View 1 (cartoon, rainbow, N blue to C red):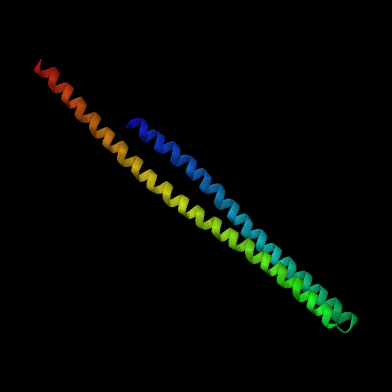
View 2 (view 1 turned 30 degrees about the horizontal axis):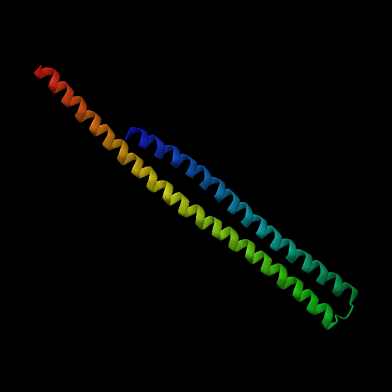
Length: 130
């Protein structure tokens, strides 16, 4: 039982490590999506300012192309954000699982300690009888 407790602690340690890595990756993906979204918005504002400064009339084709490009980039950013959300959810599930294993490990260790104490008491009682 003591060996099982040690194995649970080792498993828990590796799960906690994976959890930290997943949370870091999810946060970084979310930051990247946020930066990308702002970069796209800045580029669009710059393009719109240049168009107004040149006072070139927009053709419907250029307008549609710009809207299509913006829609495609927005869809890509939403996809990245969804992936980051999914990674955070998976990290949360992994963290809850690791906590459950930690609690189980503590219970097993407490039971092993109790059994060891009982065995020690029994041996001492037998020694006193003999």
